[in-house]
Image 1 (tube, rainbow, N blue to C red):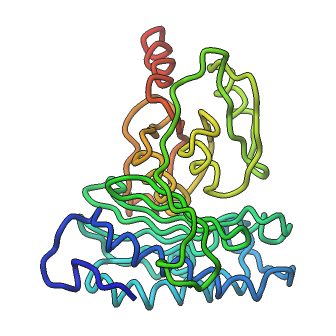
Image 2 (cartoon, helix red, strand yellow):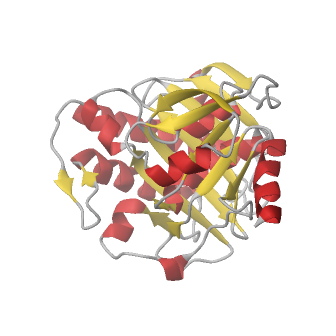
Image 3 (cartoon, rainbow, N blue to C red):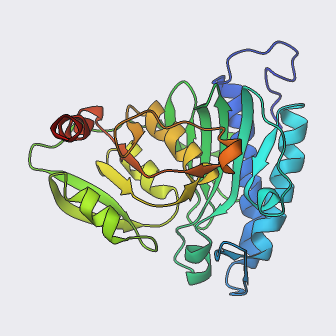
Length: 286
């Protein structure tokens, strides 16, 4: 695996492209751990009611072992470990891991599940990687946002079609909204009504952030419970592509909420930050 600036002994920017590539290779490797379980259709139920499969645990073990070597001493906050009450103390810099985001989509075999890894510094995602194993799609974020095609378990140097990605300006005709396949609720619908939506497209997992980052949609609203590992990598990709993510009142969306067990509030993710003026206008009216 490519050595990182951290391993080289001089802690350079966490957005260094060599480090991002090394993290991406870990995510792609986790995809190779996940895919042999694709189609098994068996899941247990966690205490919060969400499903968990063998693939979740095995992928998390793979990611944890390799990240621990790559980023020695950096705390790793991972979904299944936290579910088992194995929660590390965190510092100004830590990693958030969702080894299989979109387990419901994984069980439905629709391909819309991802591996999410994000690096947090001072409560903000500064780097992130999202990999969709079934689709062979990779999104990376550091100093810039990129997308590429790569097979499960492959070396990052083999990635094809690697390209910079950017969000688009707010369309005059109206906004294209990304919507969850599994988590729509009345509060989210009410929130969407505040914006000029002309079309909705459905997608699972953190892919919704990535499609906005690629300029294929404009907004993704979620009013309800998510976890920090659900959003951090997508937040990093979106921000590096020119977009923004805030809470539903337009305030900064922060990470490292250990006292709250890493629960998130609702959020609004947009490709063009100008879209968020709706929230400011509504706040001014209240």
